Amino acid sequence: MSPATRYERIAFVASQSPEAAEARTRLVARYGDVDPAKADVVVALGGDGLMLQTLHRFMRAGTPIYGMHRGTVGFLMNDFEEGDLLARLSAAEVTVIHPLIMRATDTAGRPYEHHAINEVSVFRQSYQAARLKILIDGKERLKELVADGVLVATPAGSTAYNLSAQGPIIPINAPLLALTPISPFRPRRWRGALLPDTASVTIEALEPEKRPVAAVADHDEVRNVARVDIRMDHSISMHMLFDSGHSLDERILREQFGY
Image (cartoon, rainbow, N blue to C red; front, side, top):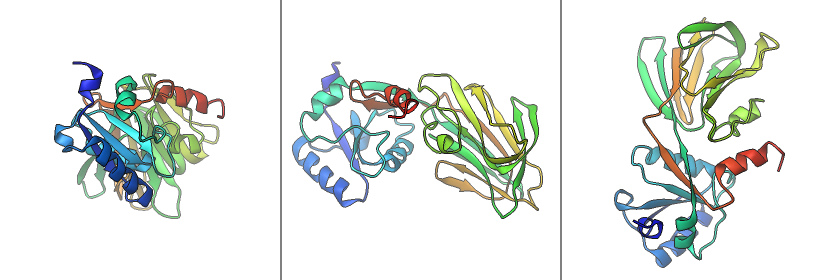
């Protein structure tokens, strides 16, 4: 099946902004619109927030996602143009990404499970700094981290909150995860670690009653956690489409040189 045929049936989704809604109306009139369950491709109109929502929504569907920028931040989006959409989709480069899976247990022993495309973060929940223990593949690697928190980021999420926390930018195809502290107090010189994407990260709250912490997987929050287990879920593959020459790996590479 040719790429052009593959991407003929389009499902359009848009953010709630007037700009995105207007763009969707014009594109639907021009190219039609099908139910996402029957679509060859989903075209998302908005910013990076809408793209993350769309990726979560269709995480298990396997349908490719092509974003066009009609929002605020558009790092994950292609430029918006109404014309030649079928040709752009046919020529688009595919980037495959895998989410993180977070399994958290709160202080009452209740389990929670969420996926994250960018990062899983563990934050202090009160005015007091968090006290955290970090284990990698079941082995204790950091006996005590005193900080505002710590996060685990995917390559796709390495240029988001991870970068703001002074974490490393990871090339999109690198089999790595970033483990990055958030405002660390002790150890003072610890700035995080790069881990293989097969690693299992466990974060334990050392004083969960006195120093409560919350865990957040993208936008899903669990409060008063005692333990958080994080790993990459290789059983889920999401396909993002980017215009030729503007792939996600190219954007991440350019980000490292400040443009």
